[in-house]
Image (tube, rainbow, N blue to C red; front, side):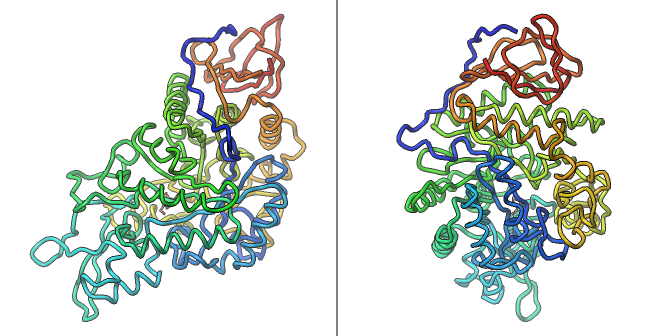
Length: 553
Ligand code: GLC
């Protein structure tokens, strides 16, 4: 490798000089509330549990916490089915607990982002109950998508759309006299009816919900299914099946419609009307980096999750291409890029990268963490990745809760569970201590069993062990705060052998070896941190397989 710059310079995100904003390079830690820490021993994580463990996050060195939904909900989809947007579900605590959590986080210097779920409500939301009780065409039905069925007796769904969780996206209702009635749209589970954002009432209600949480002091929102709130006029057929496979690669009549941007613009105005930098981050699956960038134009949301990188295979050429495309697309609208390796909806990245070898998966995951934390922009960490937790792949079917599992069977019928994995395996509660009934998750058990091997992966076991993944993250986050060249700003690629990525930032170089064998390079500078031990020979350094190193220059 030489220190010479190549011509392919990644674009420098335009940084607003007046107010760069904390979020432009924030490291944001996702807390899946149900699985983070349980204060009362019912086996389910809760807000008090989160509050008690906030010092772990402050000590880890993150800037903000994103809390997944803790609102009143029948929990048909882990709380992404909200029955009351202003209430805390008793499972997770009370409004007072939410208030305490936000205050404590702020005292510790942590911002708090909460989820908002505007694409759909729960079927137990008072609005949906009213809608069911109303007549076809009635005002209460106009808040959702009710339609008559097709076929001679309305026995066929109104169109061919499929639920993301499998099966049709429509469920037929029963009229008060017991006869089959209209159908309603649910892009996810039947317990999650889609709201109709053409309704002025729906828009006004969500403005009020956002204000409620902003008034309580939250620093922003992660907007669930931000790409889905507007559907193509007339709800046209798609014309083929297996539509879920097209999400993120094609514009579908139910996702990534241009009309969603007007809603996000109006939310931006609302956020800007509050003091401080309150942010909106879009969970948006868009087919290209360019379409994703539309969500983060200057008058829209602040960030959007960059799932293109999450989906990228462990391959230097592919990774470099995604990095360049992501930076160019967000840079063109002056927004920061986000880097995400895992979340509560995907297989944890040590397992995704494993290719049959858990050791290799962990090595790559550690390297990927250093790579992404060295890139310009903001990073999202999913709880447990700082411990190197793998996906749990052997959960008994009877303990699973993910609705996608139950709706996807070989024959497409409910109740069978046709595939392995799904989303429970990344939601197993965190191990905090080596021993104890639930490894310190709480005083009781844990809603999903933790593998015995997690004892050695616990926060307790890894703390103070310089080779542990936890200390690697702590070290990386501390350096990221310290080094002015990291975070927001420019980067460029350095020449490197095939399979190796070398990127340069002011005063800093990061080298990633994606190959299965070690590689020898001229020493780039003073080693700051590496995901695997480096060895030196006169003027050269051996970068181990599947590893990443940070250098001061
Ligand atoms: C988002 C959430 C996911 C949820 C879905 C429906 O994709 O991340 O967990 O199931 O929306 O709300």
